[in-house]
Length: 326
Image (cartoon, rainbow, N blue to C red; front, side):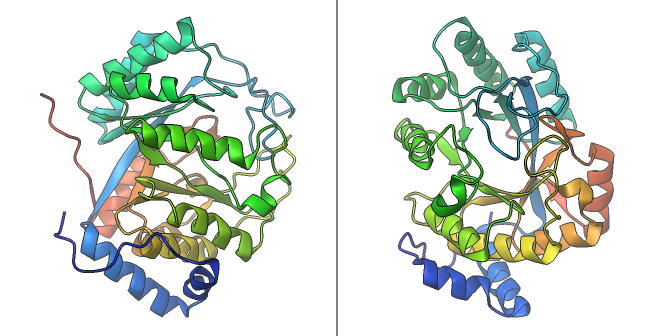
């Protein structure tokens, strides 16, 4: 990675400042984002992450975008927590295909102590031993649970804020914004990197997007990774009829996030199957330097490894290498 130049890292951004950045003429916004990106990252390298659903469906939360919610008739079949061998086999395959981070997601409201959590800890230890960065998204955590995950070798914990505090209760009623912030605080106190971002296209305003980015940018330290998702409108969910967010809107949000959080990995996440190569290239040019690899993101489709390899070849990009196995 290049040595950082004296571009200041700030944690005191106001929403008005962020809106002014977001609304710059697009060439100027992209230029500023590229300047920041090149100061802290290799612009030819993109981190590949693989996301595996280790426990699927039946979640008691009512998140309006989620096909795994028990509240929505989406046809997602419930699946018990996977066994250790299955997860480690998937992690080995992910590493072989170029991923340097392996993420495990469970459709839980919160982590409960007991045999299933002990199995997750075994998964974390096993994936860490493969030399991969390890991420989990398991719902709400206590401080003690975060510390146990950290001791097992967890690199990062994903817990998205999804949108602004003002728009949040129009999407979710079973968990508060403050609940999410408390989990993020527990993760940070345990010394685990925070992975936190949001979803565009749920009916939120530009001000809502700005407020979400402001919440993230005022964290100290900034989240280690910031996933920017385009809504995948799934039949049976309350947001099934939302129109797709445009590539230009995605690029503006990503470029703004890059300027606000220079060291973070900004991840072009869900919704890539609906994006052209040109749209994905624009988002990468705007400062995204991480994507999810593989054919599925939990229960929604994702471009396959071959499609991403072809895209990278067209753009002259390379995956960020995985750490060497000790």
